[in-house]
Image 1 (cartoon, protein in one colour):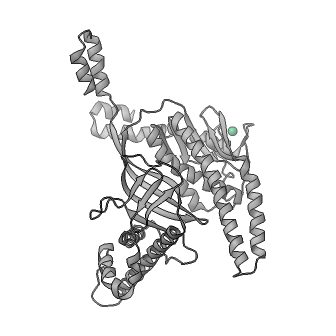
Image 2: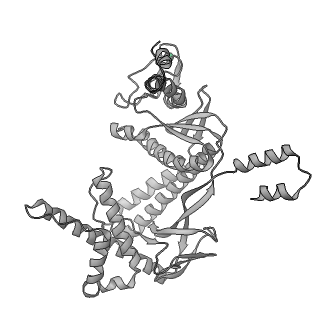
Image 3: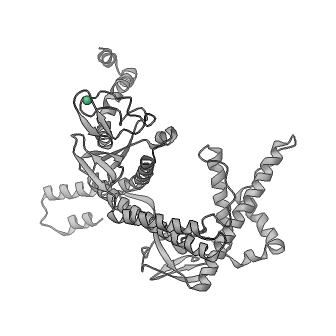
Length: 440
Ligand SMILES: [Zn+2]
């Protein structure tokens, strides 16, 4: 738009400039829609804290009630009688509303959205089950289950049910709660849903927003492979020429882990069921949470840096690793970090214009010698955890470094693998001459 007006008003533009302007207009970044979550801590007062707990309890109760109902239907359908249709979230919510006044009047104290969303989550859990992505949904324990609940951001009957303004967030039935960060959600954000959860006695809110942003320009940078590090290294990053970069575990982590062990020891000495045990448990929980945050922060920083400057990032297909089972404790711990890294990279690469590739499950990145390409079958997980690869060609290389280098070479390996299939396809669709060259 602006370009068009510019051409019309400024008479001193030459033809060349006008043309280049038009080109700019055509290559103007396209807009794309994406979901984004904004996260912060809540600062509720005593009454609000009780209300939040009541909401989480209600969500758990409704989930368990719905699960019980669905289970009954499944059991009945096993009998040689006419099949009953599985009740959906909408059916169950209607049923719950009819029962509310008689059986569960306390549910009137919490927002009706909580139950609705809990039943919707239950539907999703069953969908995962039917598609083979997850096991049978669990009943949520009052003691052990994570306290959390969802609310829908755009309820048609109450359009401004959830609102964020300055240092406050408005929730139905609870009202305005103070948050730790001012303006943690952009002013004009379209809130699609919110999740409230408790960790170690603190309450957090995650606001999901549907955002429109300019499609990023592709990053102009090197290709890298990433493997999980062990010990002091969080990640090992390598280029195809064998340049290595290491993301270190934050130094505070080590001393914090020592402290965690001490707290856990203290907890184990406390009398079961006592007040002191409860206090010690909360202390362990809090410290655990702190360590998770330090790790998370390091991973966030590393992945943002990667997604901004590397054009292609290659990782191993982790689903295979998980299937193989991993009995080396340090390594499996490192892999947990890697799977979190992959999760972060999945959306960050889309944000910043780089690409994330997952190497084929048949590409033995930790078994190939990155120098002479000999395969070393002894470098498997089952064959114990060898920290170094020793090759007949005289190369001695750290296991993770070697894997990362091989992963960074995956895009070119894949291209050579793809060529025969590609040629076959052109041969099938193309002319006789092309088929002849493909055969030759
Ligand atoms: Zn070699």
